[in-house]
Length: 334
Image: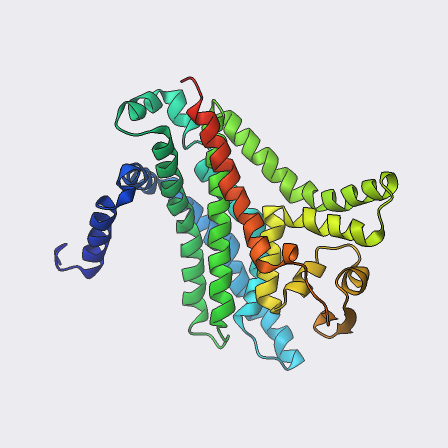
């Protein structure tokens, strides 16, 4: 079948032509070249394989051999929500590491090789170069994520596991956005720092801090203010919850928990050290313990802890590194 007869190639060709003729024409060639060059490399397919093995297949096996039996014994139907609960603790730490590996050398490596000056001698501004690198590398990050989810669906569709399409697709979209956020984070550092080694060290250092230590930052800051500023317990819990949500990892986790539980309040309670006081005194509700877990009824969630706000906190980790990286890159002497 020729390219003219192949509907997929024809569609991709039409999209390519439309973008070339749009306002994005200035940076699109950079992102297209970035994507093509990286896709030809075997390591992107190695990453895809690792993501399938560590993300999709163990979760599916767990559903068939462990979780499924537990659900059957409890008399409940098994849905993909159980898969999401199984996959979340794998995706949360794994995907940022993959995104950092993909993005850290995007600009810094070009500078080391001397090819950055050649690129900038072409009719591209530094902003267009940064935008093209971001779009191209983000598309690359989405390859292993998409392959992982498609593999999961291919295994689950013929099984007796019910696919909860809404929660499954929302989880997939949240995970894709999460990967793009950390890609932007790594590219921003790559633009700001002089060498790829420094960009890698800074990216991994901040990632490890977010993964290991940030969860204690909110509680520690709340305790510090309680000891030295004489704030009350409710204010202390406000500080703890707000600081926790500023972490992109915590923001992603609580958004997925919200998708699963259908309640932003229940998902936010998981981030606090004292759910009862948080529910009853901070949110004005009543804490009830049910078989499904702690339920905070008749409570009102302040806007700064709502879904839109948490999505905003997550996207800050996309916008701020890119803007800061662009500012340093624009004023950098090459």
